[in-house]
Amino acid sequence: MRKPASKGRKQPEKLPSVPESESSPSRYNEPSLPASEDRMPVDRFELGDTRADLRIRVERLLRRREAASEIAWAELGPDARSLLLEMLDDESVRSDESLLHRVIAVVGQLAVQRGIAPLSMILGDKSARPVTRAYAANALGRIGDIAALEALIVSVKVKDDMIRRQVAMALGRIDHDAVVPHLLNLSKDMSIAVAEIANEALRLWEEKGGGRLGGKRGKSAENRKSPKRKRMPAEER
Image (cartoon, rainbow, N blue to C red; front, side):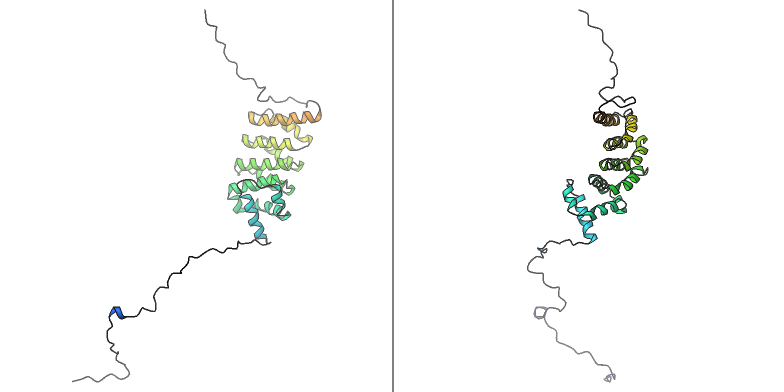
């Protein structure tokens, strides 16, 4: 006996099967690949005049293989110098030692007077690496202002020879009588590399003053006596 169709339910319609060769493609096929390869825009990205754009320009100069000239820095205007000083305290810059050293060197190269305070802090920072402190001493010497004298004097007796050598070089670049006593002390330094720099600075002071400086001069590397060699007896003939 045939069962009556249930009310409200539509029976599925039976469609005739179609061979695969005659079936049309699905609506969800992948899109076809473009005929030509994608290309980068021809026009270069131009920087604007914002603070962020200036930071990009500054970092480009800093990361050059060869140091940028003072003319190149002057073209960026006075705001670039202010940005360089801000970068001395920037954590992202401090985490990149090579970039930090370049910033320090450029501040000294441009003789930025406002850089004396942050550079003095770096020089006196005992937690900083000696090479970083040496860079700071060198930059202070390039600025050549008497305001850097206090930080340099404090570092005269540090243990690291590299720092003391740069301190001696920096003191020699400051045109003030107050540097002479400290150069005299450094001229007797146990490190020949330090003593040579101090003696050369004192020699320039003597030439400028037209006479010898007071106090005992340290012996330069050329004047230091080499250990005596034992004389061997002459061969008998």
